[in-house]
Length: 77
Image (cartoon, rainbow, N blue to C red; front, side, top):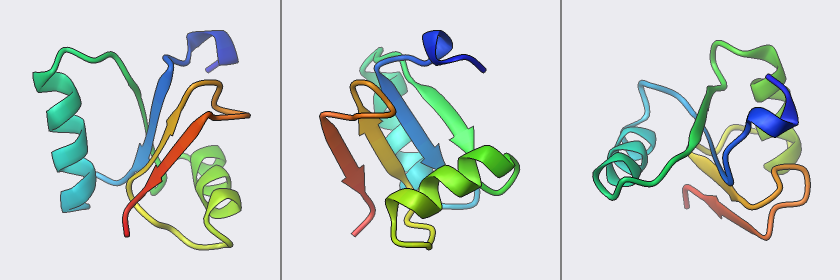
């Protein structure tokens, strides 16, 4: 996937994570476009989420804006 294919909202998560599932469902219900990357199936997404979260997974991690310089990063608490 190229950077130009990313929507302004990027969700890094896992299908088995309840918080990821709820976050994605909310975006869908509101009609908000987003890109979803599965960190447990995509090595690049796994590396990305670990860089953003001090080496660990915090799912979901939601980036808003430019994914390489997001204006907002939302993380599972």
